[in-house]
Amino acid sequence: MSQNKSPIIVGLDIGTTKIAAIAGRKNEFGKLEILGFGRANSNGVQHGQVLNIDQTIRAIHQALENCRNSNPELEIKEVYVGIAGHHIKSLQTRGDIVRQDPEIEIDPTEIEQLINNQRKTFIPAGDQIIDVIPQEFYVDNNTNIKEPVGVNGVKVGANFLILTGDRNAIRNINRSVERSGLTTKDLVLQPLASSSAVMSDIDLEAGVAILDIGGGTSDLAVFYDGILKHTAVIPFGGENITHDIRLGLGVLKSQAEAMKVQFGSALSTEANANAYVTIPGLRGMPAKEISVKNLASIIQARMSEILDFVTYHLKQVGLDSRLLNGGIILTGGGSQLKHLIQLTEYITGLNARIGIPNEHLAPNHIDELKKPMYSTCIGLILKGYNDFERKNKEFPESFQQLEVPSSLKLDKTAIEDIINKAVNKKEEEEVKEEEVTAEVDEKTMGKRLGFWDRFKSNLIEIFAENEDKPFQQ
Image (tube, rainbow, N blue to C red):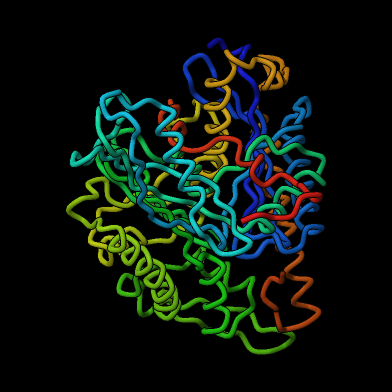
């Protein structure tokens, strides 16, 4: 596929602490060239769920404006959007059908019927089945069949992973995007997007757990024997660590965040017992000295809780260190904590590494995009390209060709200015907030063709607005 025929795909990551918009296009070598990048501080989102649509819209506008500033000739109309939050759940089911003629080979329509039968599974009121993912098939007494089509048998069945989500929570995301003047091309589960950005085919074969530590939640996706075995949303993230520091050390939220990033460690034993951080006093109060070791103890306690959840989920699906040869890949903004790899390996017993989306990016991109916090956004672009490559031959009109001069490159200076302005603006807002009151409240109402083909496309159609028809279970 030549470069000039490649569409520009835009990923929009609506997180608890940040909203990021990245526009990319594949070059002739199959690597993503980043043509636009913008981010903004997130407001109106808590634990990955949109609670205040108006505040979220303003943050989306700011991220898009920054993205356009990095590339004035870029036109953004359609986006791939990530979804996450407490409401995303998964459950294991098992089902089978008795075939009418066991002498005839199994055909795809029977597998489709088998999958559709699982969509009748009982789930709580207000939830909606997002996807039904077949795992191991079996025909009669033959188990662990990956491709049953063409096999003879009386009965065919499978184990399934069913992903569910709250209809209203996902609609709030869609409404925020649409009222920002954008069209949602598709909704993508954030754990899958992050996984596609940081995981290789070797990882998929070896068995691996992807832990995306975001601001409001931590998303877990477990792959084994080439299939998605389990997903989970752990209700803790970087914001919880900041909150713990704020309460435990009696500092402001902005100070807690700064200490976590600059001096924080996930292992108290690695912290210098004689090191202290001096915090300026508020409104004439004396300065406060904070022990770096105490800071690390607070961070370790919360991170240990998150990793205990990971261990629990791995045991639930019967996977341990003997089976997941690929270990754990840590990504997301929270994965940048010092000594987190050591803590992860100690608690889970698995090898761990930091996952960054470098292998998918073309050379000469800005260093900011190398950070694991942008894994979800890069994964959203990869999902868009999977859809394009799969559907373009059959439905060439389904993707809008956004024309950008081939000589146009991402303005790195503009990007750096945008990042610096965002940081400075955040600091100015926090200083102003400190002058008004000493109490800071918590935020009010987080080559992949084979990978993506395992999951359902066009989730947006499932959660489309349909006010005239009552919701049916």
